[in-house]
Length: 277
Image 1 (tube, rainbow, N blue to C red):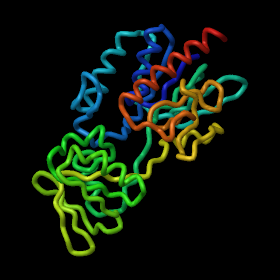
Image 2 (image 1 turned 120 degrees about the vertical axis):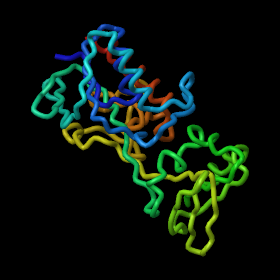
Image 3 (image 1 turned 30 degrees about the horizontal axis):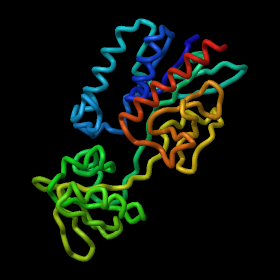
């Protein structure tokens, strides 16, 4: 019986594992090897690690966690989670594992607007977060490929960063082509503006079809509903990182720093729950 099983080996899950390890709690982290930022080579806006490769961040985190012998990391995917008689069970390929707590840190998958060529540049010259990737386009034109009301807000955010901000309806883009130093956007009207980068608005969905065995409440955004410590609507199940949205936030926070903070808070809540039980 584990004290906690963490599903997901990104920043939220790794931080939860580190915190539980420091409290000598028997912990298993399952890492499927699927990461939302798999195409990103430089992660930004993370204190002391600004610009570091996310893969290197994960490697360093694993090396630090290895110092705590109560934590085990397996490169394996969870295939199911269920709760019965007060015990949580996590299934992997050919194995059923019992635990007092489950921390879900699986992240989300992104579906980009169906523009030919756009996905090839996702995580490089195409991004969705100006805080994480805006500065790299400083002093050059950028495009906001977004037809929602948020497009104007995003454009205002980028005014002090970019030399020019073009707000373009994704439906007006015929093709995106990579060029030296950026992108060329071929529009349906025949024009082809060149920009250093573009900000797109993907549709994000929780990664974790294996959660069907749990009746987890969700927010209007589709994220799992939690309290500030990551507790979900199912006792003993916590959600952290991109898949979680506490009631006090208007939406999930897609941020490395926020994911790390969420992982620590959930681990603290798990330890407190174990002590109280």
